[in-house]
Image: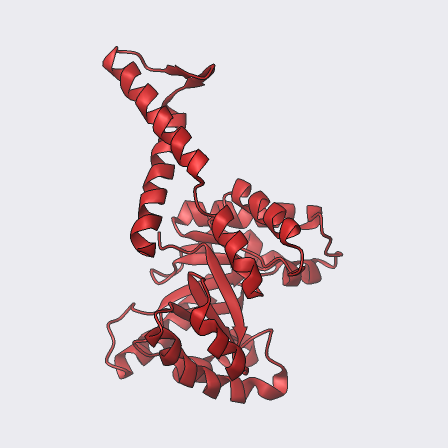
Length: 292
């Protein structure tokens, strides 16, 4: 999987904020043409995004653009404005069916060809944001080879369900967990909903850690002050890496003695524990390689 720990929304109609994003420590800069842009600014945002995608890429950022959902009638023009060799991918809001994904894939393919790009160069992250999408999450995650991750949108999901959005989050637990499981089944990244209380770093860390425990591999940010916390939670800690190495050492010793389990600090080490340790060490090494 690609390194997708932190993805930050930047309003596509705000050139001053996009300029600040040149130095953000995010894995992906997500230029937003959807929720953070007022209806009257959509056309302006499209042109600003066209200008800033290459600028952000030239500064070393990995750039994606979130476009409006297909039912708005804006998607095709937005894709046409931003698809270029500088664009890493598209995030599509309010996806409901695999056909939504396939229709978008076909539009992107035609635009890649017109721009002289290789087919499949532009990646895709669909948003799972209502009950229908949650119940089809795995099919959506597997609907196109362009897909590198799926994202859970808690705010729109609770609106669709007609329930109150709370800080504790019991009302989104099922859907949140379902999206993470669907992503794992499709072997793509799972990207957690933003934590909207952007001046509450402790709340952010608690929410991000809960997401990681559910299986999420990354999280969206709405403010640059959230990036360090998100990157920390979704990266293996030094303690986790150290313990994983101890697990592998104990396992190697057990195997050399013909045993199928080992004892480490009074806990049994068997094959599932070893697999987790091996995967964590591989992830830590991949992150080191991609952030050098």
